[in-house]
Length: 355
Image (cartoon, rainbow, N blue to C red; front, side, top):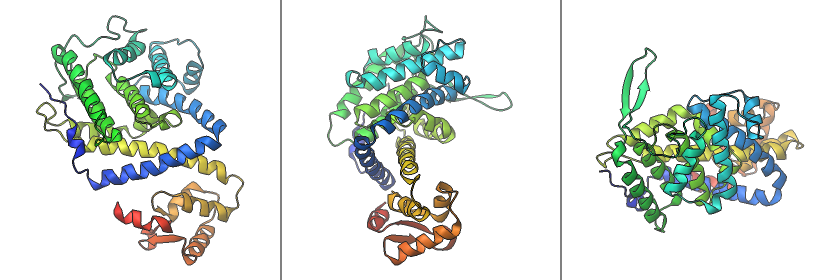
């Protein structure tokens, strides 16, 4: 029987993970400050995020419809196809989390409820119930061949495994030495390795990730779609999942690849939010001011090409003039040279070397 123990998160954490968590903490502080100033903007971002989350999480599983139909379903339109019924179920569960997260926790009843909301309209006999038969996680080749990527927990052991998983999560959550942000991907990985349902495990895992982030104090998922980012980079997501599940049954798996992937996805969410606000604040600014704003707002070193990608209407010459001026004024630091050169605001130089 698999043993669930997250005490390893109290040990020394790899430097790249610490660096990512520090960057995310900086971006989270920006988000909290901006929410006080731009309530209407955040509300519009929330509406967009729900649509992208509903679309992204279902698209990963091949459950699709048109963008216009997804918008209609999110707005309350009745589903018309099998796929739209499942899409609508995800929308209902996601909205429940966004509105009731303070009253929800990681409990068996909540997990089963999420599954029932996803599958209740299409597979009513299986909805909200653990699997009755053993299942395999399969990978299909382009030539039609199959291979077993992972063998989940047998059906007869699922109920006990889920109870042990949840108790281990509670135990770790109460330990002040364990970062709640690092606990999330570990719990999600173990849930996916148990694979407690016949169908819908991936979608339930993403709903749980959203709820876990809320519980840990990260409401970024309300304004930027976590599921959309997973869908966009699903190849690296599944590669990390596979790496971290090796030797899982023997209690010898390495959580680090999946932890890093989770933090990278979360970082992209915060960066997307940061970029959205940068676009808003730069609309009426002069060209030189827009370049300066990007450099002064950057959390990580950025290249000249990064700046031009963000500001396609500004010439290379203007970007170079601003870079030269800011270097001369000692406001930014140049890292590297020629085509590989990157720039960061001066007071971030020390932190950059610590990563």
